[in-house]
Image (cartoon, rainbow, N blue to C red; front, top):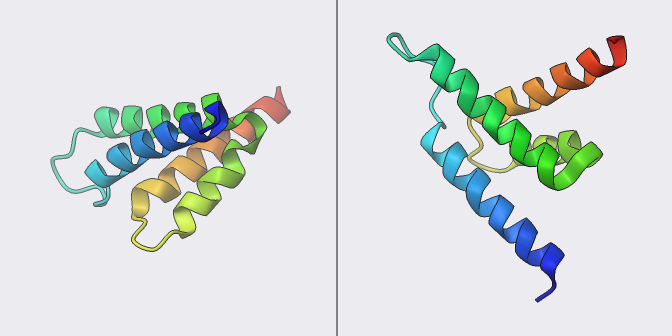
Length: 88
């Protein structure tokens, strides 16, 4: 098994764990700063492993069956980061 496949597999495992824990939407009483930190952590993982392809990967994750709102928020975070970079 090549290293890229192993790295991709480990990334998928990490993202699956984060996303599975965060599938539900925001609810009253949620710790919003913690939720935002989780979204940023997932976006950082995608950037670390996929670089400029992170947004495309986030879109694929969002389209997977069973993907919850967390996947959408990660994609939005990556889009925001991209627009922040282009406006600087």
